[in-house]
Image (cartoon, rainbow, N blue to C red; front, side, top):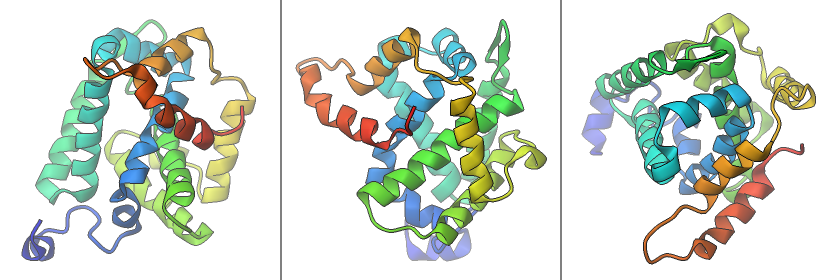
Length: 216
């Protein structure tokens, strides 16, 4: 993107934001597999993915499409960012089933939390230091995206320490847990099937992802 276009339309956050600094790193993109596995550990999120996507036959494609929309929101000019928001919200409205809805604020908050956790943890583990104040600013900025995607501002934990307590509370409550179905879904993400590429070639991804996951 040319520097002139950045000056004309820096998007929702701009090149000097902590969101740009963290999310422009390819290693943070790699940490997205950690977020996906955490999402699959929530049975209602897993049900929505299982019943309303083609992840069984195109897990990588689903990940790429999600990544493209996320990058558009963070880095794109404002019209492109808001169009990506509309696309995600429209898709979420069509995802519902027995006991779950993709527009449920509590489910949206969990998905959002996995992305924030994975990005910060991935940056610190694979890129470099990120102070507590910077991590909190990253979290605060991502709230603005979450609000656009239907998460009421008032249900967010206020600061980073409260966010971490929420995350740990979800794990401790066993509301999220890795069962056999979550493991099967995770296997399709961590060891995708590509013609001519042995699944063993993706072993490093499994190792990195395992190192980023929170303790069970």
